[in-house]
Image (cartoon, rainbow over all chains, first blue to last red):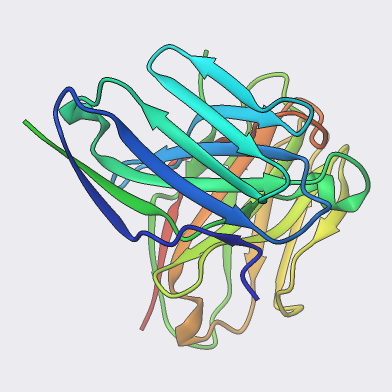
Length: 115
Length: 114
């Protein structure tokens, strides 16, 4: 049973426009959420995270929004650049107990930014 | 600051053999986690170590084991290799693990089983 779901396997966006990547989770114990970017032949690179006590976190062109009641989070990239083309993974963990020591990942969304 | 280093980058083995993968965390990081990435299952948690102790383990058979040394470096061992073990094995480190801390990943070891 997938506890973290990224329902869009791929997304294409024009350069300069906004990219919105979505993620849903089912486990109510999750209270820390992260986004990673992955290029081929490299490991995932940490982008941005958000704790459940917040509903928004911003870092430069990247903003993550969290809707706890809907168990939904999204990553906004504005403006999108060709170098943003990669696979984006949503991940979640608890912040206490054994569950805080592992990340549960979605299956990823491949973002293509078209010049 | 050096990142997480995994060796070797590529490995080819045959069924029934065993393999050991190595991970050196970011300097100062004491928590090391291992993940398996396959096209079908995505990224799945194997286990996490802190201060040479396994704190959490994912849903993998006992053929998968690991350990951590006093310098925080970690190794992962897979015995009696099966074709389905072909995957990218990723190591991640964080300061103390748990809580609101991101994990930082190495580039992985690509294991192919013939």
